[in-house]
Image 1 (tube, rainbow, N blue to C red):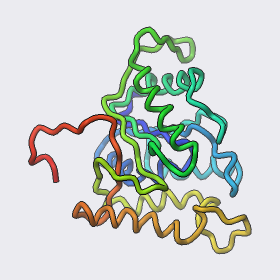
Image 2 (image 1 turned 180 degrees about the horizontal axis):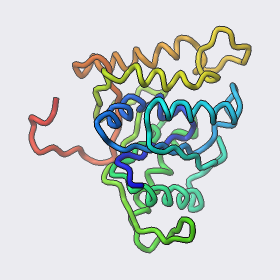
Image 3 (image 1 turned 30 degrees about the vertical axis):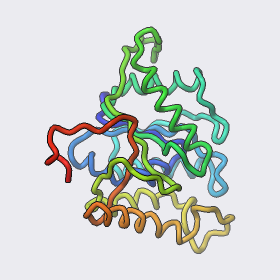
Image 4 (image 1 turned 90 degrees about the vertical axis):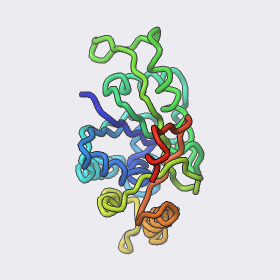
Length: 238
């Protein structure tokens, strides 16, 4: 299956939080989108590996993605080395996305920056013909995405581009809140975490609204880029 966009997250819920609105919008526009989670989030304070897995499936259904896979890397301890790069390369070559979206280049959680660099490096390496990979004993052809974008997470990094997600903010929130064990629940007896407060849940919307304010729309999601943005005309910019 060829995809238009392949979105990577270090943990289940990274993608929903970082670019859930953008994914929902592109799917509504007829694009095929897939999600790859690098880990199962097994070190998370709240919930279990099973509940996180069930929640990620529910979120994928809400967003309408074509496929969601989990590479099962070690939460907190995966590294950007040949072994891990090859596993990511296999999926890039399998789905042949035009665009890859991945974690923030710098963030509070150590896995986010690591995941960002791992996926970015794998996108480059995937285009090298002398790197040989196979899936189910079938050799793969080289493939390099045209663009790699990084969504913004805990830190308020300055975006290089924004996407108007005003019509999809409710879908984003529904997908985020599918992770019932992770976010605000006044009845929960589990320990509090930086993302389990009501303030954090509220911030998902008000941060998107503030970014939207800055670009003249109701809600927006921001991304950083790896190379200059090119347009045919100045009038292509909103």
